[in-house]
Length: 160
Image (cartoon, rainbow, N blue to C red; front, side, top):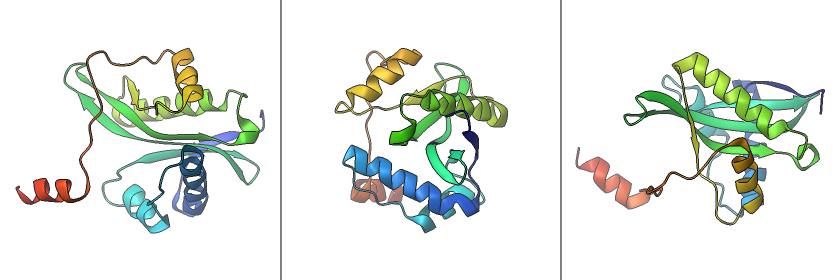
C-alpha cells in the first residue's frame, strides 16, 4: 500500500467518508444513524464537531480516521479522541491503521496542541484491542466510559 496518500476530508469527500463509516458500522454490527447531511453539518459548520482524514489509493478509500478535541485537567493538556478508525479489508495488515493514527495525532498536534490520544474499543473486537495494545495504548485504570443520549440527554439539556 505504498501508493496510499492520507489527507484531510473536504466537503466533496463526504459521500466517500459516509461509505467508509457505514462499512465500519456494518463490520461492528452497529446501527448507523449518521448520514451525509449530518456529516456535512457536524464536520464543516462554524464549529466542527469532528476532523477526519482519508487514506486514498487512486480514487478508492482504503481507510479513514475521525477524531475530535478533548481536554484533560489531569494531564493538563488537550488531546484527541478517536471516534472511528476504519481500514479496508484489502489494506489490513499493511500498517495503514498506524499511519492513519499517526497522521491524526500530527494534525491534532498542529491544530490544537494535542499531547495524547484517547479512544474506546469494543470488548467484541479482540483484533482491534490487539492492534491498539501493540501501539502502546492501555486501559485507564479505575475508569469506565459512560454515555447519555436520547431522552436523558434532552432532559438534562433542558435543565440549563
